[in-house]
Length: 247
View: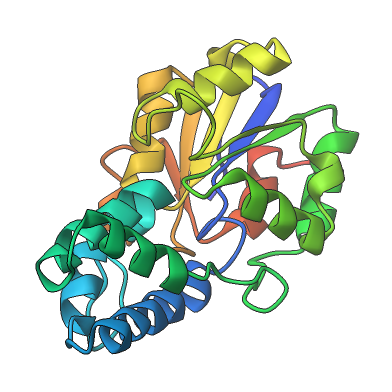
């Protein structure tokens, strides 16, 4: 499949988990471990319940592309758990403390599996004069740590993360608009690449040139197609956007 764009984009905005790195390997096992930690701390088996509110199948650990773990900010997921465990705690403060003490986000040096040769991909885009940005539902510190570990942080010109001030979650267009303002690029000169319907909807809502879905993450082809301009196996196929430049 060859992707035909009306012109070469000035900016490519990538989602992170499921698009650049393996979402399932990082977050499926993390959610499972977290649910066990909370259950042990409370001495109440809430494992399946916590996974379900995250949008994770308790047995297969398959992640729902529309579920909280796929699209919600970390703070929202924490609040979901606090609400769930409140009946087993003395008060809100205890529930908050239990969640904070058991959260333990994935270590980017232990749980990161890139889905393509990202230094080559990002380096090629930069050589062609294309700006690169990241729009993610993860927080800024782990995002920066992950990209530094992968050796691609030096290629990224802008970030929009879940814990940035006044940044509504996907599919609100604000992350893309903020990036475009920072880089002085009109949204119509940018493309959005992600693995969830929320990524595609965010791009649509922001008015980007194209939304490109990848099935390397949590979503299937039929889940992305209603909102995606194009769907690819992974970002390793991005050279199809510029057929004369294989990466």
